[in-house]
Image (cartoon, rainbow, N blue to C red; front, side, top):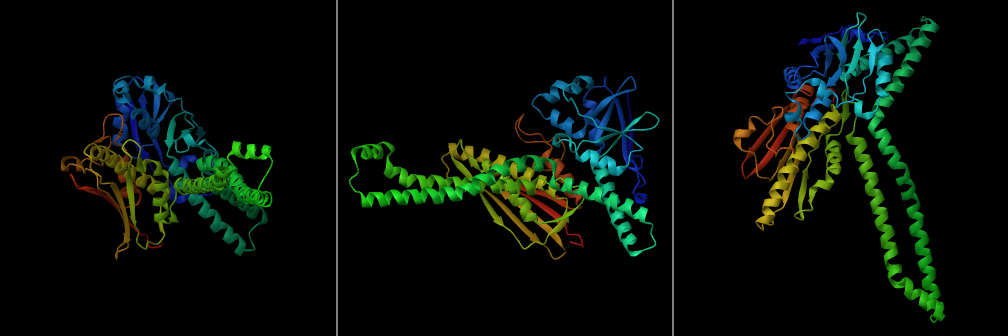
Length: 457
């Protein structure tokens, strides 16, 4: 037994500083835990924006299953066959969700602050809201942040008005100023990103320590080596004990190799610093509102993360990246979501080329795999990103299904069939753009992303 109500529109246009969760759009989709797990997939497919489903046992609340957690579990090898026809309660045992529930009269500002303090693995999970009547409903994480962003703007406008009008009561001004400070603090938390703030910071500190000391280590070691050479010039015939020690430590080799070793360590630390910077650029958690960003920066950050996959250790083949960047302005977009699109398309291209490299290696063909990334802006203010490869191509019969959920041409256990579907949703629904695929068997594949540039970019 299940009940399903579509998303109820909240009064978003009348949001106030004291607005509560009951004013937000919400989803109320219930299903009994004795229903087969396949019913969850049906509900999620019927409602592409549905963030999660409430689970009941004899019409009593049990828990929730989010869209993200459900598809993560079902994309594991054999999960679809194992759970699809079994009761949902069996599947639910594997989730162990950390559910954060609020009453509907809680302020949006306070709820946002609590949500941003959640751990990274549940950062995007829907919010469970309990009504005064004892029923439950779900609020999308992004809907909460969008409302919070609008309240932030209202706060700024009110503060400006307070500053211009001296007649406003001092107490009211202090309340607004306190609210503004709290909103700014929450915004900084979102901007830093929960994931990057933890990992990048912990890595960055010791790397900075090593990088700073390596400069002195190189200088000190060079001074010591110069001093040894000076001793050798002034005392060309050392004692027998010294000659023995020189032979044991292989002084000539040590003098040549030590500077190289320290230099390679310096190169390694710079590489780690570059990866940390790329992680900061790639993992943007402020995607609840559009930001003015450099598209090329997002592509380059994604390539750094995928760098290890560009070398095929099985065949000793490598994939060559060719970048033909145009002169693009910064554009208003959801940077984190677009980076996810680049990641999905580039990872698919690498998968296709890896298979192609294995075939070429077995046939003793020396051609290398190649991925070409081209960007340009058209006269009608459209940013175009083309990502093409010289892989085996996609048969025409498959191309119409590429953006369908769960469709994949990869072997069982390797492909989820969700990457291109999610990418299409991000480009088309979130940015009002287009995502197209052009391919021919034996001639490679090209994906073209077309995004309109907002007037204020």
